[in-house]
Image (cartoon, rainbow over all chains, first blue to last red):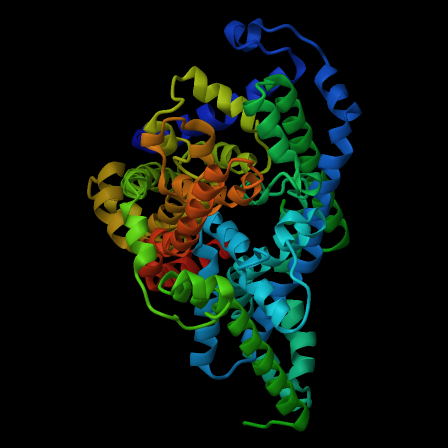
Length: 295
Length: 299
């Protein structure tokens, strides 16, 4: 069989090379977190220093700030943001006018395709105190204009609300797909039994979504400590840094801007390990409690 | 069997009302950007323009097009998108097909190898060191090969092949003396136009919007993709007001002038950079939703 299918091995060769070079060699290279890496001496030529870089990170001023900021952003996004696509899908499912349904879907999916640079550019334009539309609106209803982007306390809310605007529609697709699989005889039986729409939504449609919700929550839990670099980095400015410096931006700055490779690699590794551990634990929990789990 | 109770009617009214609010909240910023890009900047900045264009002008666009770097960025991004996507398809499709074949010895190992990277990786710094050691820093090639495929897309494609290409097809092809290569190129690919379209669009949009890898790996301006120039136009120029603290009146004057121009150009830049995606949107929507549904099957 292996002989007959020798060409299939050529089919997978480019992808295998890609995964080895850009995923597994870096995993091997993560050992620089335990060494003092000197670019000239290479990975293996650099001396071992044990947990030095990790201890430096744990004892640094940045440790609590950076982890606190990351958690604040990702937990707010999870708690406030996660239910919205589920709700949106449940609501869309009850719409009988197909053209209206299509319109809502077309419009709410659109922001997903906007690039992060444009997204953050829009935020800055809209939130500028003197000329932004949001501040004009505040002024119109007699409220005070605010420099939102310069106020560190707003940072996670701006991040989360703009993400809700950009991604809720798109994230609802998977739930809409799950709802399409509902057994219509079950719905008809419920109607005969006198269940109204709200009751059907809560007792028939929502339970159908539970497995998908559980899977999505497990996946999200595995990235609780990895808030996306791009958006936060673009939103950062000198005045909001106290609340906007997160693990990934810190790794980027420590490693590539300051050239402290080993230290940054240690911070990154710490981050990946925590993420991986949470994922495994949550998955284990989900498997014990319910029937749904990733593996 | 159209029975609507009072509770149902109230439910419908609330449901439609909420959805209309969602619709307006989502659409408003998009319409605003388009209108602002063709309005007099003074009207925009003072808040007189709030929905439809006021004192129609194309000056923002004219200024934007005078900025040669926008064209450079555009050309670079087209290059990265076209060749990046071609590479993506060349790497992803054959691999996904092989992984979908039950008679392919090693598929489980390969599958694990692919999925594992979705949950654990070496991180930015070790990847950077690899790129550096390969001598690929500040080359156009790195922006193509660094995302040669993606685990998620690979799995979606594999799922498509295993659910839509029947085993009997392969068996009869082998009886007729087909090799795997001929089977794949002559029979499987023509049957898989949907997934090819989905993947081309998935990867294409990613390349078009990509900015992080260029930020990390590219240092020569001539090689910057559009998004990096866009960042300078949209986000860096925001720092100008802070620099206005300067004592030198000439510097202040020059900076305010630049700030005003920048303001005018921003809305136009958003539209121009998103244009290909906007044009492709009807197509995108249709195929992307298909892609997500395919991904959902794997469950």
